[in-house]
Amino acid sequence: MTNNSNYLVEMRGIVKRFPTVVALNNVDFRVRQGEIHALLGENGAGKTTLMRILYGMYKPDAGEIIVEGRRVIIGSPRDALKMGIGMVHQHFMLVDKLTVLENIALFVEEGFRIGFDRIRSRVEELSKTYGLKIDLDAKIWQLSAGEQQKVEIVKTLYRNVKLLILDEPTSVLTPVESEELFKSLRKMVETGKSIILITHRLNEALMASDSITVLRKGRVVAAEVKPREASRLDLVNMIVGRPLEFRPSVDSFKKNGKPVLEVENLRVLDDRGLVAVKDVSFILREGEILGVAGVAGNGQRELVEALTGLRKVEKGIVKIMGVNVTNASPKNIIRLGVAHIPEDRFRYGVAPDLSVAENMVMKLYGEKFSRKIFIDSEAIRKETEKLVQEFEIVTPSVNAPVSLLSGGNIQKLIVARELSINPKILIASNPTSGLDVASTNYVHWVFHRLREAGGSVLLVSEDLDEVLALSNRILVMKEGKIVREFGEGASISEVGLAMTVGAA
Ligand SMILES: Nc1ncnc2c1ncn2[C@@H]1O[C@H](COP(=O)(O)OP(=O)(O)OP(=O)(O)O)[C@@H](O)[C@H]1O
Ligand SMILES: [Mg+2]
Image 1 (cartoon, rainbow, N blue to C red):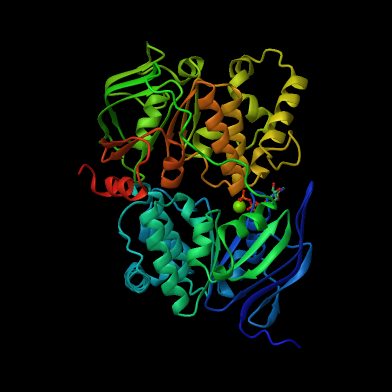
Image 2: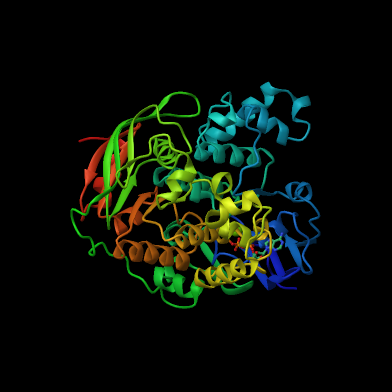
């Protein structure tokens, strides 16, 4: 018998086959008690699958799981929770119309019998202990993604978990929110809990974790690496197996290109009917990447939706290539050569039940599809296969439904499709959210190439590093207004400050 008493969880020889892919091929994975363990790997490497096995959502085809020294069978999330294992998914599972407290009560066994008062006081205590402030009486739909995530975490902590699994928690968080989250996680491990953190952000693994495991194509390539002993470059090599090819630069910009997108005094309302975009004016020029930085929820979403025809413009003018497109339909805006990578990949991005090929050509053949006119399916297959190869999209085949793809691979599909129409203007919201380092690097190169070819990009992103690395100019949005503009060479601290305090 080996002494493994300080491992809270051990997974040994885990194999998981899906009909067309071996998602996990003999994986060993161990987490100690009281640590933050980062789980890294490319899109489709098997991270989510491994964690779903630990949380009882999938049954492994082979292998065993040992929790606190005892071999266990985890048949369902209910089993997992009983053993002290909880998971927060990438897509939250909250009921929109209910309050925070009601959602938590739903998740607590016999919650409605226990009564709201007792649940409330316990939740308040948890929030205080771990620094997770939330308004218990707010309705879920009123909360930002970051706040909803806190609800998910508190809900899981309520079940007294010893191990909390977080699947890409920071991909929906602003830098400030991420920092807060890591403070809370630190408090949890100080009280003896363990955390598994799936992330594509290497800095987070290096700064916030105690141990790192890396998966590549269903196998472990590095286990229990100490962050102190690894550099960012080491991690890239472990994850991707080769160095990244593209170094972003902003030097190719031809100043004073002709305006391709002109926005004048734009006013747009949010879902609640409040003014979300307040008299915003700017110009995007040919051959330019214009960054829009800001803390999420400051009007960026409404701005993008108004520019792409998805939301009504209350006041002001939008011109594309000199044509007035204020309140034009999305279809007419697309026809002018505008591509859109949306913020919410499921709402406007893909139809999950349709195949990869159908999703890939949706834009190009949209009209033909809807009129059921003959479509050249052979040509569609070829085009899709080309894009799948170019963007390294991991999919069983071009005929597989998109719902079977990993999160990052769905995002890659959207990016590939939008770029395949050779847009004149690309409006991109958090385009690399959920993408691994290599794919992020590739997308940055593609944006760069588009600019070289005279295309323009409106890059709306919460990832300041990304905005700074690619943009020729940066607009900072706060409370619906553009509060600052920066040229090339702005520093991360200047822009970060403008995002939080606004105009100087
Ligand atoms: N239910 C399923 N049916 C068929 N294939 C699946 C299913 N779930 C996952 N896969 C496949 O298993 C592989 C691993 O997917 P997984 O979601 O675990 O990747 P991941 O490492 O979490 O990626 P990402 O970083 O993109 O989230 C992928 O090839 C994926 O397409
Ligand atoms: Mg995943």
